[in-house]
Amino acid sequence: MPFDLILRGGRVIDPSQKLDAVTNVAFAAGKVAMIGDALKADPTTDVRDVSGYIVTPGLIDLHTHVYWGGTSLGIDAEEFCRTSGVTTAVDTGSAGPGNFAGFRKHVIERSQIRILAYLHVSHAGIYGFSHRVMVGESEEVRLMNPIDAVAVAEQNRDLIVGIKVRVGRGSSGTSGIVPLQIALEVAEQVGMPLMAHIDHPPPTYEEVVSLLRPGDVLTHAFRPFPNTPATGQGTVKKVVLEARERGVLFDIGHGKGSFAFKTARAMLANGFYPDTISSDVHTLCIDGPAFDQVTTMSKFLCMGMSLPDVVAASTVNAAMALRRPELGSLKVGSVGDATLISIKQGQFDYVDVTEEHLIGDRKIVSEGVVIGGRWWHPKQVANIGRAAG
Image (cartoon, rainbow, N blue to C red; front, side, top):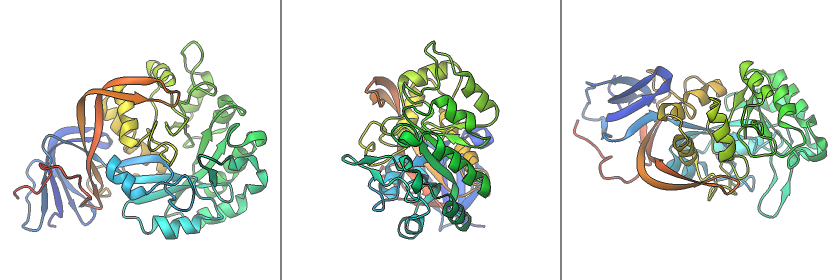
């Protein structure tokens, strides 16, 4: 089979197969076709010289809000992915059973990049989220719609990967933990994982994480005090360790108010790395403090995580959380998505949601993406052009 595209001479980092080597990656028929040093190009093959760059599996942002035009917090997925190296954007609860059909028809099906979704258990998803209006959709239990959520999830299994719920003082108010209990029933009924948002108490971090099942995701896992996973003495709370032991997954979900360097330092010092790194990008944080996926990844790189571990948390680990093993990998036969990045050296100012600043010496920069085996919307960099066959 002739190759459609060859990325030649890059440093390939693919944690799914413990690969970290300078080599070539070929794509054909929308999939990864071969990895090796001597790949033969045909006259029609698009050959890209990516020497000096890093090639990873297509980045997966496990927590985004991309229902553009349908909710006030939605951003444009294609524009975001062009600049952040993301090839799979996972929307987490922007839409519920009452408006998922519009999200599917008007955004997901028109998008050139892959959009998957966690379906909100609330009827209209996250509908009251803007600079001027901030209404927690889980405050009103009458908006919980478990019966229709089950039906919509069953009808859209090609796109819906799980059930989403938000709890906390800002999201569920006096309803407390009840929306989480309802969402867990829906997730159990459809056999899907659940993603739980947590903000200020009540409920407490301990109450939320104690209810989560193996494969469920706690997002905003490294949030600041209150409702932090770390104790005042800098250790990891026992309930958090127990949750990881039984298979609960811990996702960053940076966002506008959900990631603190202080918490991250404590967790990393205890060897408690996030399972997945995600941006929680939306209209209120895309201009800071989250910005995008590669900026969120850069923060962890500068805090001591190795580059392969950071890449794993944005590729293979996210794919496993989604139960989509064909994503997040450059194994032959996997979906033909890849991300081209570079690591810039210098002094870079990073900020968290508490306005603490960290001066880091490295920055991950997106240089281009491959989607479905094709070079897609490349960044205009002179030496990422066509190479000789």
